[in-house]
Length: 531
Image 1: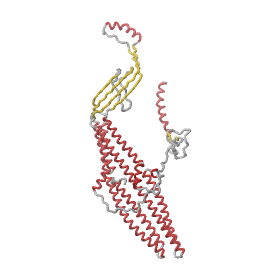
Image 2 (image 1 turned 30 degrees about the horizontal axis):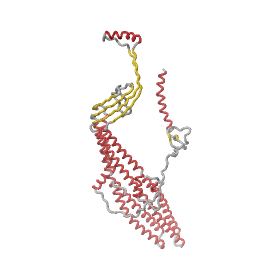
Image 3 (image 1 turned 30 degrees about the vertical axis):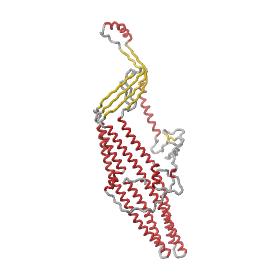
């Protein structure tokens, strides 16, 4: 009864040990979690101990002193009179951005996967050394007397009586020793499964290498758009500073006319209002400039604390030639896009996996063997394998040296439908990969056409905004001269001033929008390079 109780309560004891882990979870859904914090602020497993670091109240987590903010990039240390161009920043991004390293590691892993699958053609050798102690005992009944011969009966007649008195024969055997084995397994023929697996892995490697190139193109595009966006923000600041100076000039003219008795306080108030509005827009533009600078640093992949200057690219001529996409150009552009090439490689890999699944229904020809050396009196006929991939060593002998070599064929007969299900899964995945490829191609065509439309629209808007800026400038200058001459009104001058400012900003925004659209078309057609 005592033994039963111990056996009964042992599972309960083990289950209570497992549920004790709940002590490290949040105690309540509406209460803050109390973490276990080390002296350096690092979160460690377990529940808080008596000497754990105090945690701030509420839902504020402690600061981990092991986590450091990156210092400014040394390669972008401020240099007197040096402003970085777009190619320079792209070159830095390709080496500093973490995305390129992750893509590179994935490409290396894919190459190693090909090598791993190729190793399936080679034999597998396993060396094992075991030592131990063996003890056995046999309790037997009295041996029966046979009619083998009168001489044997006479010899055993005395032992028979002794055995009857003792109640049977007891034999015991013990011994220690060591066994050293070298085993070999070699799959000779499998009707193309390994070949199909290697083909699938090679196509997966191609897809990974393509995505490595795609990661670089994405970084180039990200840095390019961030660079142009930051340049546009800088241009808006410059233009708004000029507009502020113009507003102050008009305000000074209104104050002067008031002092001369030719103006009114209303004119002065309107002029001051226009100046205040321009100053407000300037403050907002300066904030946007700082934000776009941070976005540029983030696109490069360096510390946000880095300070840098960029080259002024305003005023460069834009090609205004009409661009039209031909079917041949779209076909060429789609067929070189990284996402399309990766989807194509994945589709081919899926087809190879279908062939590998089909080969599971066919037999396999193999060879196996081992060489063993035994010392001592350890009586074993086999050594069990350790691990899921280690086979047992069979046909051991009590002699000092033994060897075995076998060849055979295995034929799968019944597995409960596992192979059929795996084949169906592979076929479904292949069909999905083909559908993904077609969807990627269609999406690529759409992106290219949209990018071309965006570029054409941006160039048209740039041309139209240039005309609008010229007209608005003429109107503002005329109204300013008229107001100072006493034939114009402050209202007309303010309206013309705001229209000129808006036209100037629109022309600048259209310029940088055209540059961004051109980069988008190059990215969409898969032709975006470093320069």
